[in-house]
Length: 415
Length: 144
Image 1 (cartoon, each protein chain N blue to C red):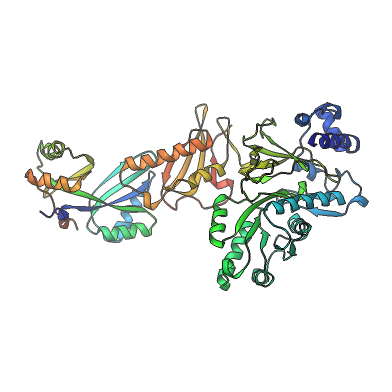
Image 2: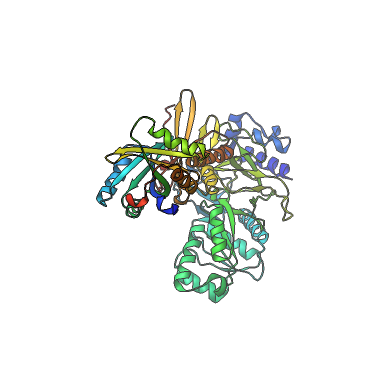
């Protein structure tokens, strides 16, 4: 079925999309070359810049009178991008989210508070229609006015909330200040969190603190908007095979990687009309798991996003992400979670140094004990990253507390 | 015998191995009017441990901790040595014969003779053996 959809899509684009026609010519591939699903690897990639370069609608394959909606991305990484939708596009998007919400155990009888922004951003309206489709009752609160959100949550019996993880933490704090106990004073049991990166540590914190389940949701406006969520197993988000084809690509070579390997998430939306996306390279790094899920679904699962391609370091030919370092350090009680990566070149070889803060409780005045701790951290990092790492213990509080790549990574290699 | 009175409280400070760290520690102790009686630095790759016997260990601990240093107390013992050739041998032999391991040690030679400071794996046993062998242990009250 995926093959048929792909074949149809490629024929349509080759015939009707000057943009994609030219791309295929450049790549020297013709629709007739697509003889099985695996031939998807012959097709050219699409990138975010393709949408920016063709602002606002030069690569649309539907005319304006066929469109029923526009969404516009904020353009934080450059010029804004515009996404157009036909009625079928909206229906497929809604179907995708309806299935996702169902996989979380939500349905008729649930009251879903949509605290994503409504408007040009896809989060609010996407969740809104998805939740209505499954027969749930929607409270379209959008973002902001947190006290009122908490009052409505109590008065209308909200059972699930969709918002960013940071907004949920904020809401939890405001509720505490108001004297509202989320566990006792509300019916809230489920949260659907996305639109910004978050971690397992945040999931544990939210679940322990507020007593509600926290599920990851994934999507970008170019794909339509938020589209996929984890199921109740919380082991990666299911990607519906009839709607999308996932590949994991080596970001350097563009080669397909085997299931289970980490690389750049690349998605083909199989049934899009207004703005077809073929082999769209999102820039997020993750893995695909094609094993059947305990929930019974056979649609492939994609792991929580590990990092961005832009953050990737290549150490002796191996891809390393600062987020992997962060994740590995979380499991080592002797050191803090702040770190700094210093990459240098010694002779012909890359040298990676990770500086971590020694926790107060773990300080011993015996050098051998301290060497043992740095050795343990080196060992754990080597296992996590598959590359040799030197570890330097530093004083607590001495590392910069900035977010983002610029301060966490110091690359001294002059290549 | 009361072995406890021979257990000396040493402060140990974790320090990165870069210029100015010892000065920062010494300045803080000076400000608090804490006198350093003996000290040593042990170094490893990238970091070191500053160990010191001071007259007011609690005050030193509090001050350094407030500055963000990683500080710990460690139990050590202090032994008088004869300030002559073979002086160190006498003390070291006692511990060696008793199969007590010296984890680290440092010494100073002052107006009242030479003193060896030791961190050993079995503190109380070391105190008993040393006393029995006739060497002189220094009570902690001498330092603070």
